[in-house]
Length: 276
Image (cartoon, rainbow, N blue to C red; front, top):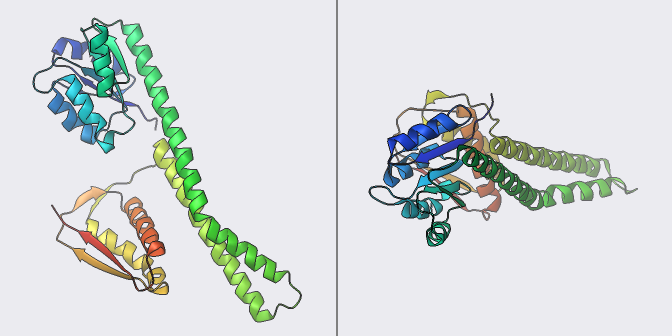
């Protein structure tokens, strides 16, 4: 299924909102807000790719709304275009200082607005691809050293003339273990790429989060025992909610795997869930 970019239009004038809906709703997933406060509340869950933000609104104005959005890690990478009747250079500079990416003057030209929307959505995509490349390279450089070293060392020992059958078996097992590590690493890379590209198919069903977390803990228990690490659970009662059980379990397993690998021998890992 094609993924549509998400746009949040913020304006206290119903006529302006209607115009933006007419221009954008066919090609984009559109949400609207009539105030800065409402925009911040919607953005936290809607996570827009682009915000078209009016300046003069009741309550907090567009400048403050922009600043608050820029301070929110959830909205990192979101593009913000100010839309205002104020055309003075000082007003534009104030918008840029607040964190806006661009500025469109009302009454806006529809073709220009659509062009800017497309430009900034493409720019966001390019930036996300660049971040993905950085994340992947960081992941590869951090996690490939150990299995590659194991492969090279074990393969080198097998090439020696005086290797006993027992040593050959140990080397084969070490090679197998390193290959499993590399396979797991590349599965992480593929999963990261799929999440970034929004091509993951979510299969939602009702369930208890703590049950899934405990399943992940049980699956990682042998690795923790091997490294002498204790996993302690501290869960409070939770209500059933709708979520993707498989995806969540994999996320928790990755987090636990990282915690186990980085913990000292005889260390403790605390898994805490508070139903707040």
